[in-house]
Image (tube, rainbow, N blue to C red; front, top):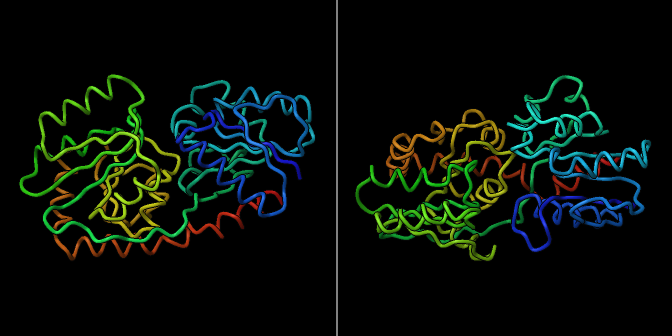
Length: 309
């Protein structure tokens, strides 16, 4: 098949949608298909269209279905789609109706869809190549926060938690500030708290080395469709301290013991303190490792093959 993928994230971007498009293109090519990636569908020939983001890719989805009403349209739902836009935005709602198939990136996402949409939805977990765990520091407890600095990520919850913690905890934050206000906030936290460092956007390999040597990773988001960095932590076997939101529960499981209420830095501080106990930290690590089958590349490729079939 000739398959066109559209994503609002431009070439060179490290946004999750672009990473998903590139990874899926590689899987689909390995399955024998011809694949193109663009920020919009511009009328080119294809047998199927995969649109990442119901709201932001709606124009492409609508144009595709007008030109080729009998050809498949697959719409992949992001966190802002699932937990905000499909409730209120006309374009996002219309994309759900137009789609022949919908994809969510973790199982809890199905609960956000009405029955008629759920019937045509599939769960495809984002995959990660195996990540080798590195030795953690011995002289301090290292916590990483990885993700672009924007409001939906609640990016400074771990930085705020530090003021409630004593001793040898250090927080390393990685990710591009998507506004000057976010950058200013990160710099203010660094001035006030010597144990907090914001390193900005690093190459992926460097970010993974920070993750792989961490005692724990914090994912503090208010909404997530299925954060790829959580999949990366699962692949590396790094304990995750996660906000209790559906996007995290869908990846880590309903009974995972490492959740805290979203935005509550006091609760996160208590969770970090608890993680100093090696028994609790090992429990989190075992639970994370038990989810590895979900994020294997072979599983994602099989799921894409089944979706196209």
